[in-house]
Length: 251
Image (tube, rainbow, N blue to C red):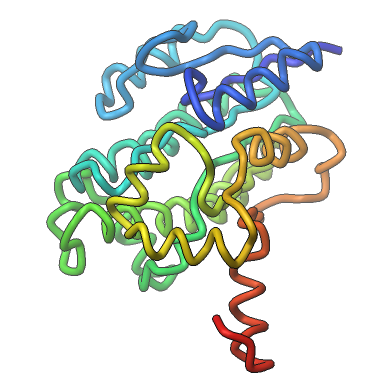
């Protein structure tokens, strides 16, 4: 049976790959992006997000929160798009989701660099993007990106509990470096040498369709016993590094 699934960031990269996979499988995809999408929305604007929520008629079987901005953006924009927009969309759409529906949020392996503990993350969630951007420790777009994804990962855990009674699963996917249009932005914000070392260790960067396949699985019934999880999809980079440190291989 055809499902109705909202995909944010559907115009390019992972979002476009996911929309194509879902459509090919017979699902009805509602794309949301700043351009070339069924629903046009600037995710830095709370009012536009609310209008997008109101524009979605009928029930949803899934929501894929793929849209995000890299560390080359300013911190306020990063927190607005990467942290606050996914939460506002998911919480606003929960009442329109069927029992057994799923939400998947795209995070990043760099979230591991966010030093906040769960209690601090919960406190930060109550702040506005302007307030988040001015917090101690947020020194540039790179650190804002890491914190924004750390906060998103914590939200996945909290939302899994909050939406459990509604029959909605919530999970996250954390990609490593992926060959998308914003890969160059990550080379600038993280450093070309850092990404080159990662590529050398894993053999290549990931492809958008590889991340999309994991999201598609988490949206489906075969993932019915997965809830509140963060699935790392990085070509084994972090495992290879960790193993190298313990067995003496270069990391």
